[in-house]
Structure formats: structure tokens, C-alpha cells
Image 1 (tube, rainbow, N blue to C red):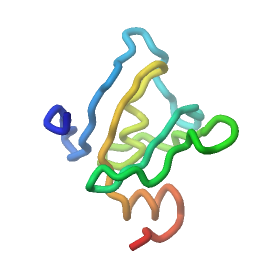
Image 2 (image 1 turned 135 degrees about the vertical axis):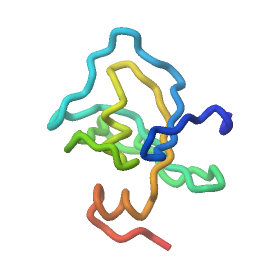
Image 3 (image 1 turned 60 degrees about the vertical axis):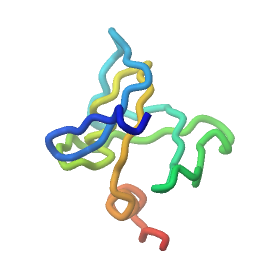
Image 4 (image 1 turned 90 degrees about the horizontal axis):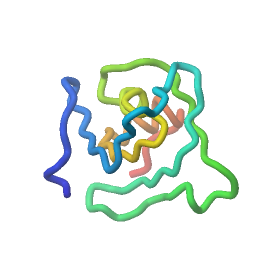
Length: 102
């Protein structure tokens, strides 16, 4: 439910679907193996890593409290299932090193 999202002090919106009680926390420079789905503002699926061959890995580059993907990844532990709302332009620029599609 969209109303169940919580916000960090930086404004990052997040929702735990499943929270691990004793999962290993992620550390800077570690890779997370995960299934990721990207949705637009109207909840239309833009991309899913399940369409890729092999596992999808993303490196946790730095600790952050700026409402970006690094803050989101830093909140996770092994076994968690979460949703995040991050700014697309910032994500494309700082994570994908590309310009955001219009």
C-alpha cells in the first residue's frame, strides 16, 4: 500500500515488505545480489532484472543520508525485501552515469 511508505530524515521513502531479523548488514564496497524492478510514477513497470540472464549485482559505493540509492542500499540486510522511491534524474546521473530519459 502506498500509504505505508515511511520517510527518512533526508526524505527517502521506503517500505519493508520483509525485514530480516538477523540478516547481515551491507558494508561499503560490497556487492548486493538482488532482484530489482523499476516503476514510473504511475506504477508502470519500466524494467526488471528478472529479464536478465544471471544474477543482478549492485555495488554499495558509499554511506549516504541524501535520499539516494546509496542510502536505500545501506538500510538493507540479507533477506530483506524493500521498495524505495528515489529521484530518477539523480539515480541516472550518479548511479548509471547517464542522462535520465524524458
